[in-house]
Length: 364
Figure 1 (cartoon, rainbow, N blue to C red):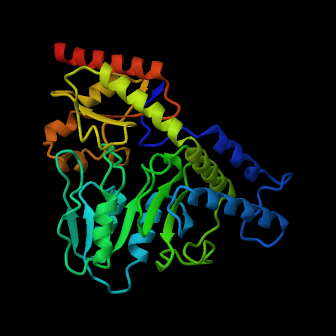
Figure 2 (spheres, rainbow, N blue to C red):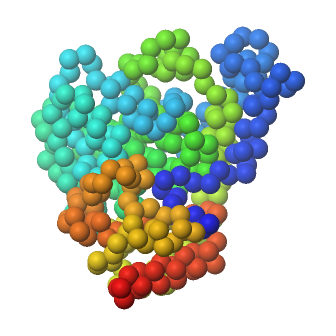
Figure 3 (cartoon, rainbow, N blue to C red):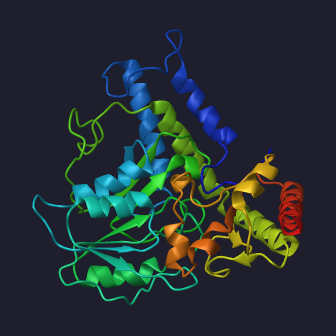
């Protein structure tokens, strides 16, 4: 199997796995203690979590703190819901290409939601008019479906000038590029070669949130529930490795992108900007393509027909529609995601197989 679905999830880094194992020990070991207990085993687990917290914070801007959550979706909910005072109905502004975790949560809050449009390249307009009294502006840094890099600096500066909070979905950016200067940044471990089941919300110093999960208040009073030291350690190790390898990984991805673009048939059209983009995301379309048949014919390749978070819905991608594609064009699109552990030979084999399978469709 050739894995080309890095936007859905990334392979677990061996270093992250190694960091997790000591904290999975049973009764004969010392690593299974509750990190919120005061005895020796609990304190050891808690210390491992604090190391991990610093490692994750190393990916973020200075002047903030990391709150561990069960996922980036939970982190986004904490940011959007926790920053809203009771009864606050001031408007929100969110981009048209946000992840469903942002779009659906914003709608669920009951406040007016203004949509920040994107152009045909998949780039949000940083000069968009923001509603009077806007409470929060949300813009993802790297889009999960088409990989476009958004003008967070410009839009967030405008948001700050009118007193609005800023939220950045940094899931696809963390460990790849410098994270935006926002008030809150949502992160996910399994998108940067860490384990599934853990995310984080980075919160700038001075930003006050209300918990959305009540109980013991274990995570700095903002998130109740017993954390997993193993998941935290894996997240931390993956974050530290991403920071250490950022330039090496970036160069590798650039080589893969160039190789893929060279090898894929010229009848493929790239969705979104080729320049303002994380080049580990290649979202392409080909007229008349039956994507379901393509995926059936290429069962030894793992790639996506769109956002993995919305797969199976039967609905065309809201991101592809936002950049101006009609339903037929969106349904002819696939997403190839590659990164640190993708070999050039594997990518070459995949590109040739995809070309050949698409050609066979045209002949039948």
